[in-house]
Length: 371
Image (cartoon, rainbow, N blue to C red; front, top):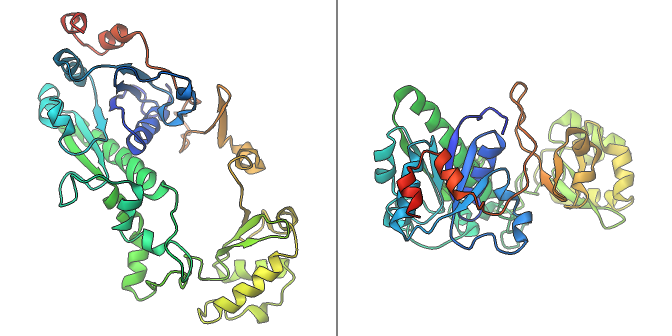
């Protein structure tokens, strides 16, 4: 794979969600990532649609057998990093904890992805994205006034505060290891990541500029100029002209008198102005509003569904989505001017060429023959 991480070798212990997302990002950027999965994985045809496993090989090893554990340990000698997403202690029970792996390769970066973290009173409990963002404060802030918090997909915990956080941590530790010659453990917890993503809001709260009441703040749907509105055809548009000059342009293009929508930043006026704007946006279809507002400084965008987004002219111009083996994939990001990433390769079944992979990664023949 081409990209800025070409030549970097990563071992990924196959799990669900955030750790595979980290592995996908590293592979998208050119790293050679080998996924270690359980025996029997890849049966059926669903593997084709597992976008998170794209652009890398998967081999199946029975880690209950000493020979398979020894094969992974031998691979770590050639690896820059290993990433895993199990509960604390699981890798140690298999004989693949940080001590065992870093004994084979002192410069190895050991990336650990969990919800609650490697320590703390909840570290051994089960959980999912929703639980992790709940104790960070982020979930409480998402939703409408007078209603329960809204489930924001699993973007905040699993992917933004989880897999992406792990990828940044692993990259930073690999960079440091190149100068020090010493590896380290990266403890990426989704509770930490979700809290980190909330940094700006915690700053607003400390300054007295953020209310704990949902729907009363500028960025949580409380402000009339930062919200989603229903159009005449039942579709939606998103407007966000925070700055006064952008706000003025939106009002002008909508044919509205600015004096009737001032003062913009008075929270006491927001509920009434929101009702007025809602009435305005219901007068035209989403496409009609696009003709009036899209591409201007009114800070406007149509709300697109999963089918529409890949077809939008801006996304098509940037190749934000690519088709791989008949499946639409979000393209690798970010973009690199001198070392661009290759288009993603389709997810593949676990390879039958286990011997070739292990041999290429320096696993001794005696270990391979014992598998």
